[in-house]
Image (cartoon, rainbow, N blue to C red; front, side, top):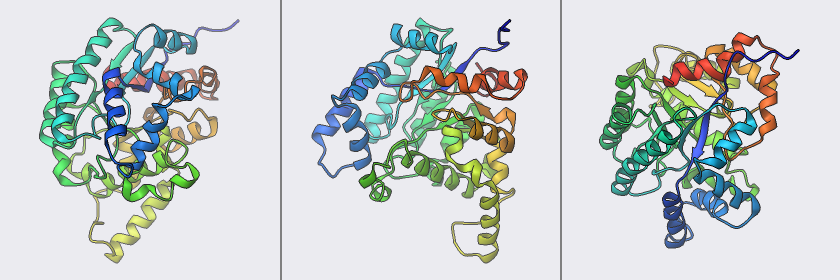
Amino acid sequence: MTLTPNYVRIATEEAWAPPELLARYRNLLTEKPESWDPGFRSLWGFFLGSTPRATQLAARIQDLGAQRIADMDASGIAKQLVFLTAPGVQVFDAATAVSLSTELNDRLLQEIRKYPERYAGLAAIAPQAPSAAAAELQRSVKKLGLKGAVINSHTQGEYLDDPKYWEIFEAAEALDVPLYLHPNTPPAAMIEPFLPRGLDGAIYGFAVETGLHLLRIVLAGVFDRFPRLRIVVGHLGEGLPFWLFRLDFMHRSMVNANRYPGVKALKKKPSDYLRENVWVTTSGMQWEPAILFCQQVLGMDRVLYAMDYPYQFVPQEVKVTDELPISEADKRKLYQTNAEQLFSL
């Protein structure tokens, strides 16, 4: 006899892009010079194209209605945490990004209200204007009921370790909501070696760029300044859990040698912040050894299920996490209660 699981499946990194945003992306591809933002051009030049993969993704990513609900049902997903796909509003000028983030957050709430038991959402914010981003985060949480914010990694080549962005962290900590640091294609200063072999996207470039961003945040002392700040990263931590030992060893060596002006002593080891202030999701990484390793080194409470819909919509991959050799109580944490607690669902 098959027992009914004592959990529901919540997927916590699920992408959305309404038609009006994709129209703006098309305009950028047409209007900007060929040399402008090669990462954006590589990503959306493909997904706004005419190949079967591109057209299928474009159809699914715009939909928060019957098609997506049917896909969730086919996968056994009870609820999705939805947020704006990369690069979100971060590719636009500051004024456009601020206005668009407000408009799209209102639009996301309208869509959630149609299926309140199936969706929750994270706000889009515009780091280009940090004060406006902090204000929009507060509005989105307090007025709209969104559960935090997504930041699609770098903003036109700039990273959040720069103190000019820290009022965003201050707002997230004060509101007690997480920030989801989602991948973006590497910026122009970084992308050149990735492009010839197609390594700029999800195969590798996303992880390299986002892992770099998170490490910059850690080493800048952000978590010393904001000890209750919570950051979520996908794809099982973008490779960083594997590096915990070496990060601690090399950071200690660099501090002792006083080698870099931008590397100072921290109150804790880098691995401590990655265990205490960071949560990881399984998005796109339904692979038993890697999931078990992250649970081992980060803790059962720090790993959450995600599918990475619609970029990696493979319903049978749910079977991997269903069959993990862990207790039913720990599966419930992975699928349900970790997400409920982190995102106040």
